[in-house]
Amino acid sequence: MYSCHTSCDLLNAGTLENELATVAAWVEQHPYDVVTILLVNSDFVDVHNYTAPIMNAGLGPYLYYPPKVPMYKNDWPTLAEMIVAGKRVVVFMDYQANQAAVPYILDQYSHMWETPFSPVDPAFPCTIGRPPGLSANASRNLMYLANHNLNVQVSIASFSILIPNTADLVEVNGVSGNASLGLMASNCRCKFLRIPGLVNQG
Image (tube, rainbow, N blue to C red):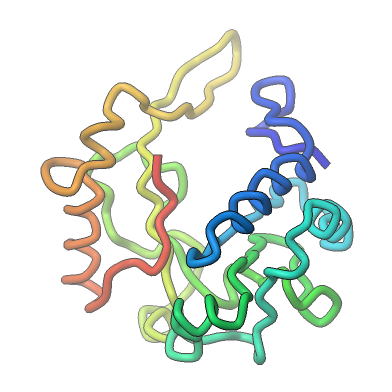
């Protein structure tokens, strides 16, 4: 298993196991932190292909096993409770998760919704992007993830792809101001009466 962006020919970060081993080493050295991993399974690979990289990387002792499926927003333990229990790594997968077979890889859209993916609008509208068709009423029971990683569309040969807008990173990652994460969090709080529980930040 390799960690790639769109195609391994475009961006290959190496094996998933090596990448997760770096995370496991960090978790071991930071006993008072909780880490969330979101596995983007855009190739719809069977979930069992992920178990060996996760366990071989050394994450096994830290994995969070939810007591029920789904976990609604008020079901989650506090960060302090997770730290005391030592179960400080929460793994989500967007597609092909099967918690009956692999309980520590949580089905993302059973537990959360997210704002529009790969945003190109610096206004970062706080609307439901995925899963499609989720009602506003149903969304109130779930955590949500804010996609706050500004992208720009570029053309290479006959391909059109989105790449991170690194030129505006300081503004996008800011606490306040136009396009800032702080502004998006404030807008989301006004709309949904709570700030995002997770952020995919650029």
